[in-house]
Length: 489
Image 1 (tube, rainbow, N blue to C red):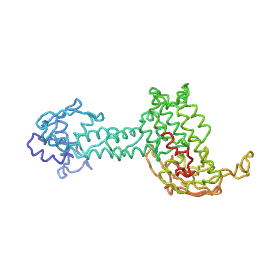
Image 2: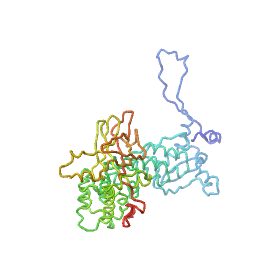
Image 3: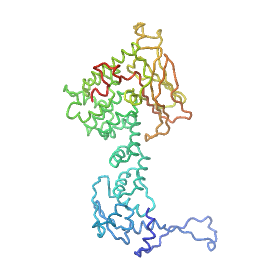
Image 4: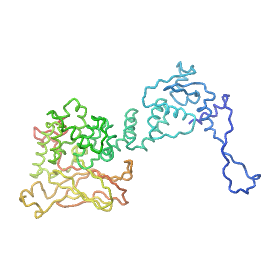
C-alpha cells in the first residue's frame, strides 16, 4: 500500500537519507571457494521496509502529528492521504488541513491504540498481517479511515478464523458494521454448532444475546442434536447462566438449573415475571407441538414452570386433531407442501456419530404411527419405516390397536444433512438432500445419502421430518384451531 507513494515522497526533498542496513553473509557452499572471483551477496533492507522504519516508526520528516487514545503518531500527510478520511481533511475546507497536530475523537469502543498503530503503519507498507483476535479492532479502524482494501482483508480473516473463541465477537461486529458475508458465515457456524460446541461450553453460551438466541431457535437451518426437547434444555441452562453470573461449577449446570427453577414456589410461570420477560421471544421460537411428544419431557416442563401452561392448551387440541385425521385415514402424510410450510412445521432432530462403525437408531416420542429408523454403514445413510408385525406386538394390544395409526402406505417429507466438522466446528465435508417426498410401505427402506469417499468422524446428522399434512386451508381447520405459530404470538 505504502509503496505507491514512496518515490514521490523521496523526491520531495525531505531529509530521508538512507542509512546502511545489512544482515549477515549467506553461508558459503565451501570454505575453499576463491573469494576474489565470487560475488559478495548481502541482504539490503528493501525500500518498503526502510520507508516503514524510517518514516513510520522513527517519524523522520513528519509534517503532521496525529493524536488519539492518549497516543501520538508523527506521520506524513502524503501517506495519510491514501485514506479518504484524511484526503478529504487535508484537501477540503477543514481547519485541520492547516494544523500540525490533529486530535481524533474515537467513539467506537472496538478501536484500540494498537490497532490504530497497525492501520497507520499499513499506509507505509505493501501488506500487513492481521491476527484473528485483532481483526475486529483493525476492521473498526479501517472503517473509520475508509480503507476499503483493509476492510476486505479483515473480513476475509474473520471468515477464515471462525471458532468458539471468535464467533460471538465476529457476529456482533457483523451487525455493527453491516458485514453481510461475516454475518452469514457466523450464523452458519452457530446453526451447526449451537447444540454441539456451544452447548458444551457454558461460558460461551452465557454470552449469547437474547436477540441472537431467538434468531437461532427460530431458524429452519438450526441443527438440533436429539430432539426439540434438547433446545428447551439448552434455553433453560442459558437463562440460568445469564441470571447466575458468578456460577462457575459447570459440571453441575443441569442440576443447578433444575434447582434454580424448581425452587421457585411462585405459581407465576417464569416467563411471565419481570425477569423472565427478557427471554420470552427465545422460548416462543420453540416448536411446542414437538415438545409434547413424551410424558417425561412434559412432566419436567411442568415442574420447571418456565413456560405458561396456557401456551400448551391449544397445542394439545391441534395434536389430537392431527391424530384423529391420521387414525381415520383422512391424512396419510404430506405430499405437496411449500418449503415455507415445511420449514415452519417439520420435526427437528439429529445425532452425532463419533465413530465410523455401524449405527442404527430412532428418536423417542409420539410419531403419529410413523416410526422412523435411521441406519449408517460404510458411508451410506438409510431411512426405514419401521413396523413390528402383529406377532411381535405386545400381548396387551388388540388387533384394532395395532392397526390404529397405521396405513399400508404413508407419505413422508424429509431433508437430511450430514457434515463432518474439524476441531473448530468448521465443515470438512458435507452432503445434504433437498426437501423430498416419499411414500413408504411398512418396513420399506430407502437410501437418503451416500458418501463415496471416507468420512472424517465425528459426523453430525441433522434431520427434518414432516409426518402430517399442515392445517392451513380453512376447510381443514376447526373454527377454534389456528396455526401453532399464531397461538402465542
